[in-house]
Image (tube, rainbow, N blue to C red; front, side, top):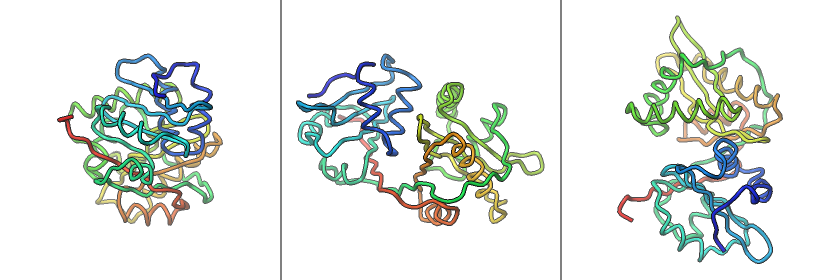
Length: 258
């Protein structure tokens, strides 16, 4: 059975989402915005005994998590009608649902020693420079158009004020030179995203200093730290500084002609 979620479902949603990257993202949406927003749809999947899945659409991005008992045939039919630009879930679940054109990225969990290397808190006056740096150095992360930045600014600021996002950065000669953000945070976990370093200043340890400074802050809050590597270079970087591969995440781009 599929139904729109309400606050009464939250305890079960928390239980299903605990300890995973997709679950952390889903919980962050709910903790930030609740269950009654026009731009946020939250659906739960149940069998006769318990909740077996959660499907969330935030604007045009969907995120899915399921237990092994979920009715994949029913879920696949529903997703076919679920209008969204992109679906994110475990890669093996994407395949089980019958998707063929999947982009797979490796996800990592921090298992090393957290070190505070004195990156600075990301302040509001640096948000635009941080966004510009990320969209320039890692174009797969953010679009460079102004409308996309304003959407990011609104969402990141909203979550940050609620303790569900944060960022650190470094400056070189007064100019922002590296940045790392948490794209999603929940009570016990966080996903680091938006990691970028000025290409002219690489090989100076700025990336490591920035990421591990953020990890240290999250570790002090007793949060498991995850990151999704966007390319092979990022995989090597994260493994070098103390992350280990934990799972594969699948992304399915959906056309707007559904």
